[in-house]
Length: 213
Ligand code: MP5
Figure 1: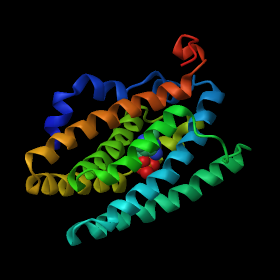
Figure 2: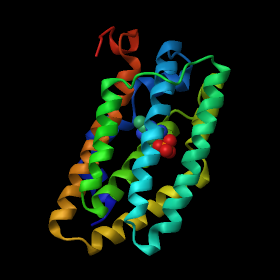
Figure 3: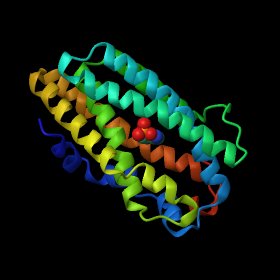
Figure 4: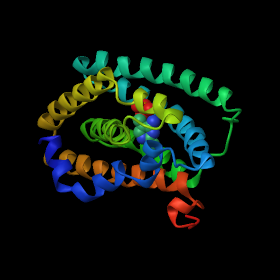
């Protein structure tokens, strides 16, 4: 199974997950400050949970994927430090309550522990790829946000995602029909949660039509 097929089969949903008014606001510099700050704090909490998810994935990874996943974990830990520095500069409190949309996404990641390895790895590939595409679409980004665009669009990050794609396709190739179905479901869930994450950041702002939720 090729992961490209998943992108093609769920093109519209994937588009909504990776092209969003939030990102247009990053590109043009029109994003309300509180939307960006809410996103930043919530994304920090998400990455904290992401690190635990990836550590659990590493524990059951085949030998051939260990280096790739360890590299990802090291980058995640560095990223947490980077978020902490960004929050300090903006005077943001990171010990916040996870928004329900974020908590649901993190709960989904935790639940992948009970799913086949190939499905969990597909989800990891999807969530990383979603960020690569999302921030690429916002490039070069308004100067205020450029550092964030650059953070998720480096060649190293793109290489990491290619590595995840290769590893997930190898795992899917060895998996049964059932696991491949679970991988597709996990992909769809990731795309929905990603879309919801941007929505969460814009809640109550004009970009979201003033809607709360
Ligand atoms: C990522 C993220 C990318 N930081 N936040 C969401 C909601 N989805 C995906 O993960 P990473 O670890 O920051 O590259």
